[in-house]
Amino acid sequence: MDLRLTDEQRRLRDDAAAFCRSIRPLLETDEEWRRQGMLSDGDSVEVNTALGRAGWIGMSWPAELGGRGLSRLDATLVEEVFGYHWLPLSSYLLSYKTIGAALERFAPPGLRDALLPPIARGELVFCQGFSEPGAGSDLGALTTRAVRRGDSFVVDGQKIWTSSAQLADWIYLAVRTSAEEPKHRGISVLVAPMDTPGIEVRTFPTLGGGVLCEVFLDGVEVPAANLVGELHGGWRVLMYTLDFERITAEKVGGAVWVLDGVEGWLRERGQLDRAARERVARLRGEAAAARLLSLRAADALDREAPASHLSAMAKLAGARLVQRTAAAAVELLGPEGLAEGAAAPVGGRAAGMVRASVGSTVAGGTSEIQQLVIARRGLGLR
Ligand SMILES: Cc1cc2nc3c(=O)[nH]c(=O)nc-3n(C[C@H](O)[C@H](O)[C@H](O)COP(=O)(O)OP(=O)(O)OC[C@H]3O[C@@H](n4cnc5c(N)ncnc54)[C@H](O)[C@@H]3O)c2cc1C
Image 1: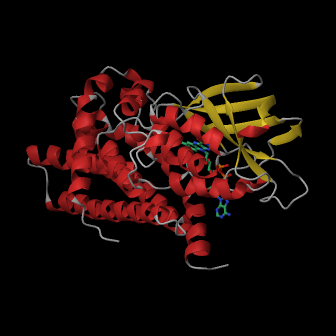
Image 2 (image 1 turned 30 degrees about the horizontal axis):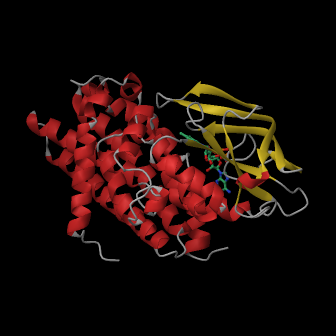
């Protein structure tokens, strides 16, 4: 893998940065955005619509599906820029980067052609219903049931920790379609509009400043045509989805922005002593490594090579990076680092980042689970 950027990739990143600067006024007036800590996980319908209108969603899809035919690697380079500008990306990350990737590969053509173009336009937002009260790390233990009745499945159960369900148009659901098969083999994936009768969403506040959701499913009728991948063969679809979710270039971008801000703030005040310089430099090294791990995973996915262990490494490194960067920012900036508001150091975001970064080693699979994936899939350990 050649790590030098081509002229085209440089131009793409410059265009992405120019776009981020152009929507700055939109963000300045968005109170929700201000409150949130690790902003790439934040929600903003306006930002998602602006991203779609400007052609930044679905970049790696072909033109007939609303994309630009770029590679996943190129999209990952752009996501790093979005992260550096702290765009609230939850809808983008779920609908395009994660779920959209799986829909492109596994959805039947009619469903794919109906869903991907509006996602690319920023008009359709997905949420991801995997985790349940009794199934997180052990996702194979999920109990939400889908029973075939005529041309439909009837779904009953509960999902939890569902990001963006409060504003999503559709849900991507992991359901149990067979209790007879070994637990990982009786799972299927369905998609359904959120206004389907029987779906209820309840929000609860998070440490990071946003909300997460519980999604209750009571006799929800989903057309059988909305099955993604094979019946009882959903585990493969779920794992493929997670391979994309675990690429964390946007988190690396956000961390580097904070490091730039901390360094600049200390330098201006003559406080950038040797210890501070060393700490920032070490974190910059970790950021460079995390970035390369994300690019390597994206490159493997472009080549359709096994990527689970590579994505797990990217996730592990990116999640640790944001936690260490947030902690370093408040320690190096001192009490002022805890202040909020635009005039505070690093735009008043350091404290919020500390709060929000706690969840970074849990969301998308905990660090322990990433280590298991690396050990099993990468190193062949049993
Ligand atoms: C901010 C945020 C957003 C999220 N968004 C979504 C979403 O949109 N959709 C969705 O479906 N889910 C979402 N989640 C849920 C997330 O995927 C789960 O929280 C995660 O997979 C862990 O599951 P759990 O919370 O049930 O913890 P558990 O699985 O109960 O784990 C508890 C602890 O045990 C450890 N552990 C468990 N099994 C093992 C093992 N085999 N070996 C070693 N240690 C182990 C874990 O590492 C953890 O420390 C989100 C979570 C967060 C924090």
